[in-house]
Image 1 (cartoon, one colour):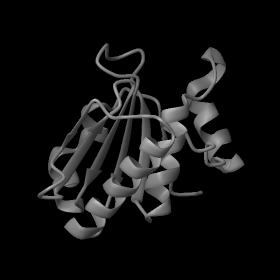
Image 2 (cartoon, rainbow, N blue to C red):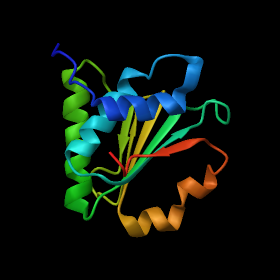
Image 3 (tube, one colour):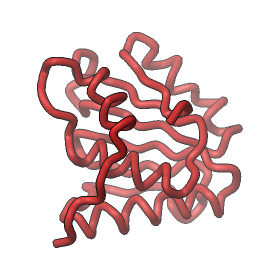
Length: 137
């Protein structure tokens, strides 16, 4: 197992504002967010669903500029998390690259092409969820 990649302090602080006093930031949330941002994921958001859903605790929603870009983000997240001993429960949409979903049980990563993200509007659907933007990192 590889030593965890250091999470930038600014990201850790941002995620901590979302988690609040309820505990530490989950490692898979930090690690997959770092891996997505390493591949220049766009318009990143983290939604806290703990009070709204029993299915998962967090959604991380990002966009890629093209299907090649979305697949590169997904590939980096999968490689990065596997190196750190975290395996997803499921991966969907990686072949087409329009909407890639990587399910880590407690955290679900959605990687969209912008037009697909605009169509499904997960941010609006889960509008009651506390959220933080990753744009200012």
